[in-house]
Length: 606
Image (cartoon, rainbow, N blue to C red; front, side, top):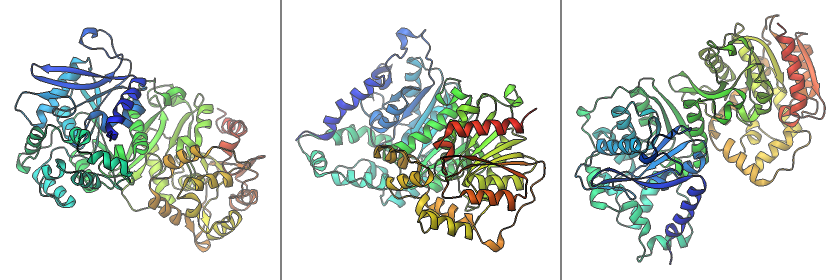
């Protein structure tokens, strides 16, 4: 029987060729050769005068597979926007040496020399597990080459204490016993410990692995057995010999929340070791091999991180003058923003009125407000945060109230240099917006609220859920399948679009897989008892506009009128949009934008 991976590799090579990536052997010194996957138009030593126009990103693999099998999904996703380099470390893939050195420092030295021979002057390293340790050593040894790092499920150094704890968690006595199995059952055990949920494989795949006449899979993973055992022997360092280096680079930690090899505690310890220089990002339902197990979620985080690291004015997100930026609110709490590409305090952006868009409970910030960003970024300084547990924002704190969301948004805006702003909030974002206006009147000088309420009281909840036919908010907004996303679209629009199922599946995978437990907790913390509800005293100068879809069945036109007349007591102006439901800014973007532009022009007439 033909081995599955033997059949797959030509296909993968073909895909890599299509995205502009090719293999290249680089002689580091006589007897030492590293195989790289590099951009097809890469400048080599024979063409070193040609400068790349894309940021260089170098992917360094772990101990299980070679470079391209480890990072295939990331290379295919990023090769158009970045100059991608993927080395095989020594004794993996087609890289080898006749020297006897086996330490991580030698791997780091060889990769750095190889990159310099390929003409790479500055790069971002992306490393996982063993590759992450190589990345840390490269960053320490070659700060002129390494300007930033993204490391996944790794340690700065494999100390004795980290090694003992990790092996105890996975039930092995040594790293060779775990990482160098000599049976297919051993391979399956390796994968079981390295994933959150080991995917089911059909029988023919298992038969191809077991096929004695073709051990391609075992060779790829476990070839050069003697040399790899020597690498593992040199990997563990005595605790007393380890000191934390001084890193000058920007560092991001991108972690599978359910990794049991380097678990979440290890991730937080690593972040603490880096003394505030690192930002921690978590991927739900992912283990040690997060980049392979949940490639779409991993790529989404990685793209946001790389975009924030490389704000060169040519990234797609900068077409409207905004860039992706992660803001650490406090240790363990990070809010992702789309913010002006230029520093407001140093450029003409500072003379534009700041407008902050707060999304609802379905999508993240940019997916909710992209039509408005495109329409308004020329005239306003646009800020679009992701709420905690949406997009690239997360916290390790247990607070889930709208007040905590409001606090984090306000602190993030202040860290970005925003002194005064207009809030534009939809649904859940409107509720957070009302809390921000109450808590930070010096920051919020006006608001535009769409299809929302001041607070989600028990009585409002009962009537809204009865109208849409659900027993709880979580039943609607934390769907279990893509069909639940279709239901959200049907309820939130006046006339739902007939989209193919594969689009709903993509939306479900991209927007609704992560943070299910935390989102349920957010919804539970949202509901307020009627007797506990109070009307804040908003300053008279804090102007409020209500912009509503007339056909909204969640927060109806009646609720909008009640909000204007009874709760805001004449302080608000109500505007309506015909033939539009709850997600009015997506359903009728041109009409919504016309109204919003008029409102903002009236608020910022000077």
